[in-house]
Structure formats: C-alpha cells, structure tokens
Image (cartoon, rainbow, N blue to C red; front, top):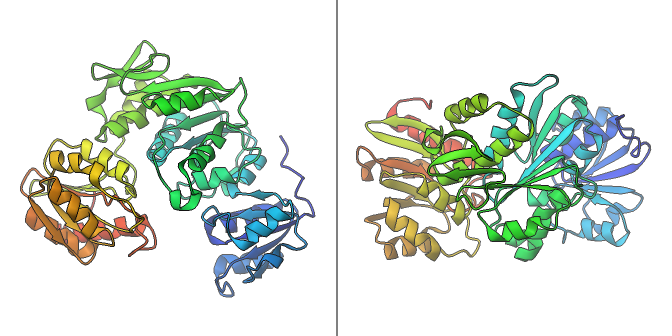
Length: 456
C-alpha cells in the first residue's frame, strides 16, 4: 500500500526525544506533518536534533499541560507514564496518544510480525528474524522495536516484499490503536513493570493488545505451558498456534522425550540447542512455529538453532578461562529471568546479582539458589534483601561488592574449575547504571581484564 497521508499538515507533538522520538520525528516529517518535540533536556547541540531542525522540526523543553494546545496528535515515548501531565492533558482533550510502534505499523506495507512477553522477547525476535531471512523468494527480514532499533525507521525504508519483526514491550503496546501483526507471539507473562502499569491486570491487558486487531486470517502463537495464557488466547480472533515445552499441546511446536517437534515432524533434540536453558527451548519453539507457518525447511531451522549463541546480555556466553565459563545475563531484570538462567546450568554457579530495589523479595528464588548456586557476589540496592534469601537457601559464600567491576574478580576467587560465573541480577540496573546494556558491557570488560582474553 502507499505510505499514509493522514499526517499531512497535521500538528504532531512528540513527548520525549531519545531513539524512538527521533525516529518518529524523522518519519512524520517525511509524511508531511508539522512536528514539535518536547523534551526536558537541552538539545541545542544534539546532532540528531540539529538535523531535524534543518527539516523544520521545532524543539521545546516545555512539559506543562498547556504544551498540548494546538496539536492534533501526541506521540509518546514508551517509558513516559500515562500519569504525566502532558499525557493527561492530551487525553482530556481527546487527542490520540500513540507510540512510535503504532506509527511503524501504519506506514509499513509488508508482513508484520510482533513478539511480546515478560521474558524471551529479544531472543525469540532474533531467532525468528534469522529463520525468516533464510529461504526467501523475495525481500528481506529485519527486526526492530524494543530490541534497540526504532520500528518506524525500518518501516519507512522497507517494501511490501519484506518482513518486519518487532519486539514489542507492554509500554509500546499500550500506545497502539490500529497495530495489526499478521503473526503475534506471546512468550510468557510474569509480574513485571507494576510500578508503571499499577496492577497486573493492566499489564496483562497491555500485552494482549498485540492481538487486539488480528482477524481469522492471522496467527497468535502462544505458550500453552501457562494456563493463564491458554485462557487469554481464547479472546483472540486469530488462529491460535500453541507451543509447549511440557507437551501440553501437540497442535503446534512442542517437546516430547527431549525432542522438539512441529506437529508430528521431528525438528531436533533439545540438548543440541546452541544456548542453554528451558527458557531458550521455549523461545526456540515459538520461533519454530513462526518459521513453519512460513514453510521453512526443518533442515535449515535445526542448523540455525544449533549454531545460535544467544543475544548480547541475555544468557550470553562471554568466554572460558581456566575451566570457568562466564555468562552475561544482564537483561535479567526480574526474578523469573534469573530463575530461568539458573535452570539452564547443571554445573555449580557463582552468581553476581543485585540492583534497583522495586520492593521485590526473593523468597521464591531460594529453591533455585539452593539447587544451583555455590556463592553470590551482591551489589546495588537489593544486596541486603538478596543476601537474606541466599542465606536461607544455604548458599556457601555471600559477599558484597561496590559494583560489577569489583564483583568479577571476587567471583573468580570464589569459583572453582568447572563452575559457571553468571551475571544475572534479578533486578533492574537504574540504581547504578543507565541501562542493563551498560551493566552487561562493564561485566564483559571486567571479565576480559581479569582473564586477559577477549569475548568470543
């Protein structure tokens, strides 16, 4: 279809610059909109802001409620809450409040695939993109969204022959109205981001917006190992494609006796996966389902899954030194993600954990700590709370570090040949670092400094 014209001469306010705001401003300008960006930061010397100013984009630091006056549409940065005075004022004025992902869906003319879930989004998005990039007759498959590349930037340059795979966060999905993926994937739902959504019901509702506009011609790929998700799927109008590591349904992708299948077709053994852990088996099953809906060959699927080494900061193998293997799972910003990471290892683990205190307690992590962890090195706001649960779990050694850089050599001293040294914080990074990526990179740097080796 032709690029949309609904933004021609419309006055659009973008709340929050960052990557998504810059992308939205660029795209909307190309679509003929009159764009203003509101951000509290001084962007007078920002390179991307200066380029947009040359194209007619206006910038303001005003974020009072009155800033919405005279605008037709508000494009909100996903991280800005709906309690923000500008957002409240826009909604009071019946102004559409959308996310940059909604904009991407409006301008994209090819096949749209969207993937969401509390955990596993990025790995599944990466796997799906790799699988669909192979054996194509035309076009390309590219990923975007919460994975770090603004979806609207991708969408404007792609064609009707292409496939866009969007990692979709609950924050982004809340700002969608017409978003319509041909294939939607829901990996799991845990109790995440309740500080933003207020209640778990609100969080679940945001996740389920991924299928809100699907029809009987579309597909909703859902993890049937969770009864809640199987029940939620019944509200979708799309064709339900289940996947199940526990073999609860054989209508889609599933595991039986340690082997992965698509319906009755054997794909590969689970222990041949290139990355460890039951959670990665689940991610692989979701990706297999999407690939098979596109008619991809079993041979190619198995080859990709066997050689896939993981996504940076997500149970990423870093290097091995003197019999110890280092893994970077900085993306584990909640307890469930750390549980999944620990379950992926049979060898003893020296765990680096701790971070932003969101009021979580760690009692339901204690069984995992007791089963897998030899020692913990703790830092950040949650270190004392985590230490209490580690002690209750019977962890042999509990020590404290100032930060990740200091924690790595301490973990080395506590380890033995054959051990796994794992960064999996079970907490967000914002108490000490701007994001989980920075935390993970500092871990890798500390490992390289300690071992005098570079990551693989």
